[in-house]
Image (cartoon, rainbow, N blue to C red; front, top):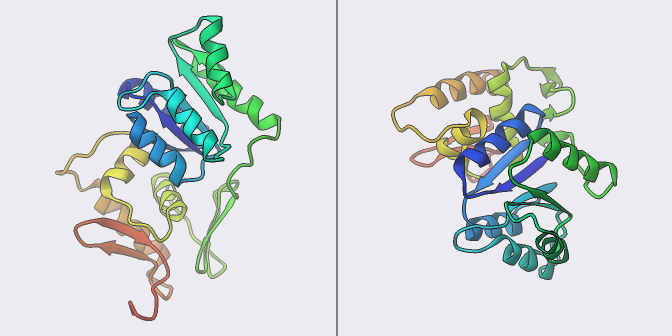
Length: 229
């Protein structure tokens, strides 16, 4: 499922994201309150992990805005404020759970699973499709025009991310942070190498080509329109 982590401490955010990805989730990150609120409102997430004390806009303000906007995405609050009154305030603001820092990742994962068992969260569809390209997130099977395509693990993660953002421009920075868990190095060609291999597998023997390079911006997975040729 797709999870948003809003946490200003980069080390903590990366720690959470790494653990969630190892358990098969897709993770977006925001490191201040304004960016976090924008992402939470503009995208559909199965769950949001929200730090309470954030720059630009605090976690409780984000929660109140989400709920007043009728955005009912389940939220787990993370906070160093662990008194009973603090927890009650967070839950009354619209939080679904409250986890006090420092915490064990296993406990965070258990709380996510508990919310799932309640039936409050509907996981993203397991089948992603763009034109005749299909990716099954449960079996990790990839097909185009019914023909199986064998991908290496990193190629699969790149394709999954591109398909989740189908029709949108995905930058090299986004891919590095989402698939490799480190920040953008303008000198690296690791993205170009993997994109080239992926394109060779999903486009070489099929028409039309779906994986497009947007010069100076990044990549986009979409079915070309007749106007675009």
